[in-house]
Image (cartoon, rainbow, N blue to C red; front, side):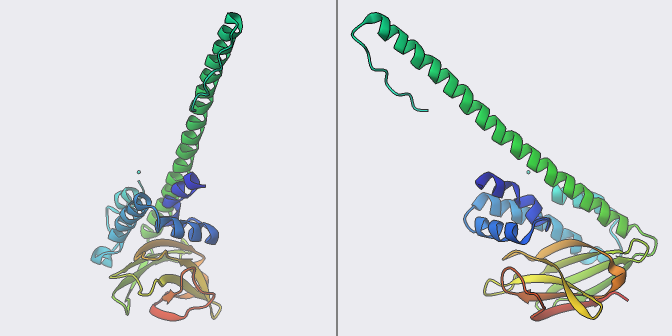
Length: 241
C-alpha cells in the first residue's frame, strides 16, 4: 500500500483522486516528509497560474502548466558426516540462494515497473488536464471573472461558452485554521454542487469544470477535512454570467 500511496501524490495534487484516496493521502502526508515536500512543490507551481497576471490569459500558460506537472538471509547448511551428502547439501543451498536472489531481483523490478507505469499515468492525466486548460483559455469567447477571498487571496474563473467549460484558479494567502480545508462549488439549478475538496494545508488549485453553461456561479467555502455536502462558510463567490 505504501508504494500505491507514494504514486498517488501527483494525482492528489491534480485533484484526480476519489474521496477515499484523498483521505488516505492526507493521512500519509502527515507522516511522509518526502511526499509532503513533493506535494508542496507541485502546489507552488500551480499557484503561479493564479497570480496577478491573470487579467488576461498568460501567453506562456502551456509551459507553466507542464512545469507544474512535470519527479535473504542464508540458513547455515548442516554438515553431514558423509562427504557426498555434505557436498550435495552445499550445492543445494547455493542453488537455493541463487534462486532467492533472482526472485528478489524480479520482485524489485516489478515494483519499479509498476511505479513507472503509475507515474506515466499521472503524467498523461496532467497532459490531458493541461490541454483542457489551454483549450479554454485560448477560446475566442473566454471571459475572466475575479473575486477576492475574504480570508485573503483570490479566485479566478476563466469561462468559455463555446467550450461549455471553465477553469477555476484559486490562490489563498493562507490555509484555513483549525485544520479546515477549502472546497470549490458551482451553483446549478438553484443548488450548490461540490467541484472538489482541497487537502489540509493546501492553498491553491487549478480545476477544470465541465458543463459550465448550467452553472450560474462559482464559490469557495471553508469546511471540515473531507468536505461538506453543502457550503458552510463561504469565502468567495463568482458569477458566471
